[in-house]
Image (cartoon, rainbow, N blue to C red; front, side, top):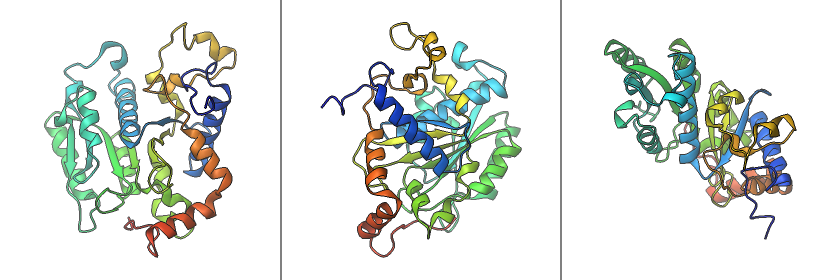
Length: 293
């Protein structure tokens, strides 16, 4: 029982579990085409993964673009002009996250979709320009990799170009479609996911794992600094110098279960081929019912 009930906040409470989660995260970063600078953390589900990514995007933009320390000073009038763009059929965690961050639903700009239920790129460009003219500040684009109702995949390559042109963060909500990367036949549909600054992966969907089991991957792991705060009773600053890894440094949660064990065991026992075969058995001939981007 103690193996499954370790608290993942500090290394002294979960030494082996911490090493396994770090190993799994490194494997996932490699799987999705990220370099060695990438990092990630397990979360309770897709909503929390999305929320984590949006927080990091907000803090990165405020620090790097607005030159304002929102972590220290909180939301100001300029922050209330921040705008994030997502498909009109994207997950409701976008609005929830905006509410929790103090930005409000007004900060979430819903972009129309085309006939294949993908975010309309032309409409996105137009909405960004309209917001700029109105004095608002675009900071984030969220591309959906597998919408809940339609399985549609937004064009991440085109979204990355828009994000780069406007100094915006690009997040991929791949909660539903993240498992496509395992398929030799369909992986090409998510080939551009490594262009995103962050990725939500949900293992209790196409990876067929029990809840709770999700992760958020960050292209540049240094951005997790936005969530780090030290306490002598938990994660002393000296721990890092001594070589200890305290996962609470990059997590919204403190007490957290050893969810990485499910993924580690599944990958060890079943491997890529058996996971793909299991999906084929579950979904029938159309093993990956996601629309081409």
